[in-house]
Image 1 (cartoon, rainbow, N blue to C red):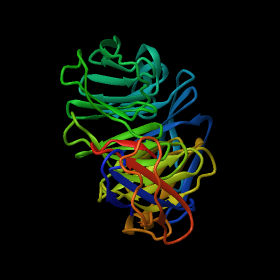
Image 2: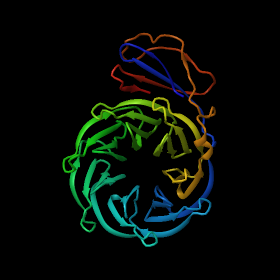
Image 3: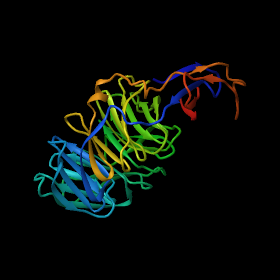
Image 4: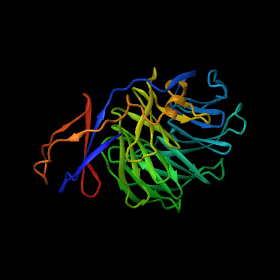
Length: 371
């Protein structure tokens, strides 16, 4: 649990201290894997099928038996395939240079139906109804009409000089990671005129994003961040599970998050308390973990650059918390002085056991100003 103590006037109005413990595999076990010569960069799951994109290929994998996943269909694509999402009988791939639309009605024979060349570099993709939304790097958000698979066409865009790497959809809003500047919320109720309506900045580069209910969940350079988006015009940071490093992607299902760290693998958290996410399990993968999705039986499927791994998370899902991974409470021993302050101040705190500490400072408006 994250323990936050103290409200102060001025810049240091809210101080949050977390004790961060080292990664170790617990509550999760590898049950099956399938290797990919051309890489595994991201994965999406529908029922018993996993759709894996890597360099040059989309591969469809039957995961009905997690111990022996089997490739049943393959389609050759371009070189850079960074993200994938599924709607109905089509898969949509963020393919670096743009969008690829693939007919997957016959999983054993996927075939390309349309492409769109974007002006930037497509990292992330989301779909709703007749529109696909691309997180197009420095070219921000591109909105593409997909009614005619043979004639994909751009109908709107938003270019606000930020770097979009991942995108998620919820009702009439898109949520876009903005690199070192947090996230941006965009109203797409009129797809031809996407409009930025809100944003929230925080410390740590933002990589992946998912939304559920009133919250957005972001994989960042400092860990899992939770944003309250109940008012899209004024989103605010609510919780943090500290995991230093390149946390690049995540999947949300019910009360649990599955986040992958490029260097250290899977981290699972119970997010039923959006203000105090609790780590419940982890697994240190043998290769770079880049993409993650949850199967219908509760397993985590991770695109590990060179293979797709299937991980049994039963133990982690059955635990409320795990003391080995809990973010432990700390206690402030002195007032912040001076306060208010401009550039420097002093305080003391203790922790129940030795380890690294993550200290966050919030302004009176709830905006994180330093970590």
